[in-house]
Each structure stands twice: as C-alpha cells, then as structure tokens.
Length: 153
Image (tube, rainbow, N blue to C red; front, side, top):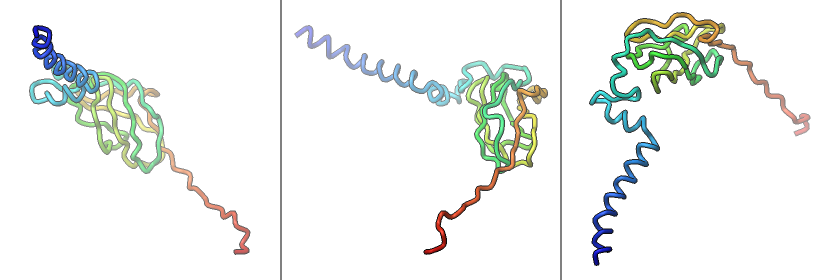
C-alpha cells in the first residue's frame, strides 16, 4: 500500500520533469524565443546591452546566382546588439539572428560581381573584412536541352 502511494505521488512529478527537460534539450531557441517579451531571446538574457559594432568573419556559401534567393550563414560577433540590416551591396531579402555569432540571410537579386557583406547593428556597420566578408554573385549558366530523338517520330 505504501509503495503504491509513493508511486502515485512521485510519478506525475517525474513525468513533468521529463517533458520539461526534453523540451529544453530539443529546442532551446524556442524556449527562449517564447520568453522574448521578458528580456530573453535567442541571444539570452542581457545580451541586448552589448555595445560593440558587429564584425563579419565568414560566409557560407560564398557565392550564388544573380537572381538572389540563396540562404547564406554569416559568422562573426555583435549580432545580438539589435541587428537592423544585412547588405550584400543591397539589403538582404530577409535576416534571422540565430545567435550573437550567427545570422542566416537570404541574398537579394544583384548584378554579377563580388560585394562585401555588411551587418548593421545599434552601434554601427561592420568594417570591411576582405576576403572573409566577400560574397560573389555569378550569372547562372543557362541549361540547353538537346533532344535525343533522331527525328523519325
């Protein structure tokens, strides 16, 4: 009887603890994102007080088509200081700050050539850091279809 009573008291607490731990391990960004109205965000509590200018130290990939639409991961620092813009010569189609050191951005349409990727936060715009911040827009090679039929229908 005592054993059954103890299990009935402990089991619900263990189940709730297990679900809470699994949700934190599975998606910490979702947990902190849901608390963003209380001073938390993907950057954690207190990072918004960072006062330095952003720096760009790498891109992946480093090239894409002139049509734009390429998802680019930008590494560096200072991204939790209210990033307001990412430019590839012209503003990115969209930006997503994943951490203080990582941004995901979608390239805009742009003429062929190499540009410096710049990140603007509350303290200013990142300095040029070539070649680490350089992105190359390339003209896509048109595909040519050649029929394999000999014309005899």
